[in-house]
Image (cartoon, rainbow, N blue to C red):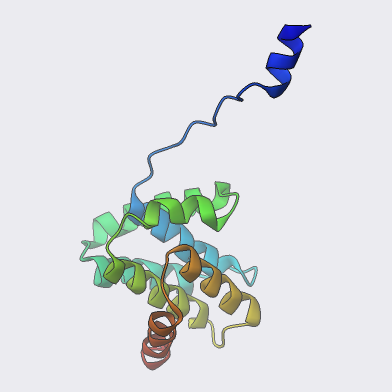
Length: 146
C-alpha cells in the first residue's frame, strides 16, 4: 500500500529537455508567425531566410540549414514557450531583432491580422522585450515593408 502512495505522490520523471540551437528556435518562431494565418507562402520563407542572413550575419547556406531545422521545430512545437526558452539565451539586441522579424514576416503578405499581432505580443513578453522596444521594432518593420 505504501508503494501505491509513493507512486501516486512521488516525484514524476521529468520530460527530457532537448538542447536546441537558439537561432533554430528563433527560425521556428518566425515560421510560427507565418503560419498564424494558416498559410506559409514562399514569400514568407524567403523573408525568414533573408532575416536570418541580415539580422544574425549568417551566410546563405547556414541560413537555409537553420530555416529547414526551424520549419521542422515549428511543425512539432507544442507552444511558443518551449521555443522561447532557448531564444532567451540570445543577447537582448538579437531578441529585439527577432521581434522585428516576427512583425516583418506577419506583414509580408499585406496587413497583419489581430491574431498575428497577438502572437508577436505574446512572444515579446516571453522573451522579456518591453512594450517600448516591441513598438519600436514594429515601426521599423513597417518602414521596411516589402
